[in-house]
View 1 (tube, helix red, strand yellow):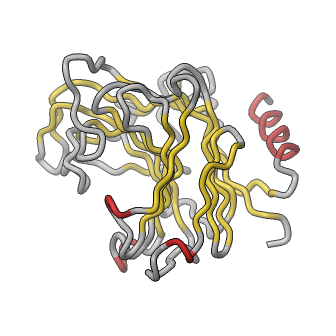
View 2 (tube, rainbow, N blue to C red; view 1 turned 180 degrees about the vertical axis):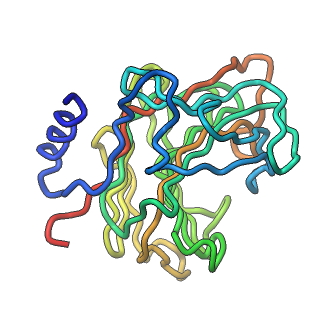
Length: 262
């Protein structure tokens, strides 16, 4: 009943949108997230960023807290995945690939971020054709990344062919307080030829094809959702003696909408 009321309130707030996907993470403490909605990436190959975690399956590093939240927990523990790569940390990376994808719409999550040197939470989208064309040709929409030791900045970035990695189109917004002190809503509104980024309803970035320096705009196909908590990597740097473990990314909900009439 609580989840239903929350969804109805969201529909009232976004009156121009129709709910197409949601997970409120209601369920008993310790349960894994819904397998009907979420798959997993597994292993510790660094994911192209020289990350230090090995992603696991089941409820070892991703579970419900019994209070309506998903917990993605990164632990300092030696972990060897099925890829036979041993890493000093374990964590989880959830994705809706093969279960849900959508072209255009509003994608949002209400989350409480972790923070610390080398801690890298992310909520993002990848083009569903990645298996055919690879990255970055498939496109990537980073709705939220946080990489600073004190989580006061929300980063929103667009990656595609010719504007990927450090050349991605990126902006950030600074919060008055740490984003680890409470829950905040991170979202994008994605329409043909335009993507907008929001923190708690405040738009802080808009990207159109005119801003990608003549490169190909690949954001005209379905994308799927990813939630993960990485440790280390080229961008955030690496944990040091000040970084506390375990680290937790708390997700209150993930919701996706389509604009009415589309």
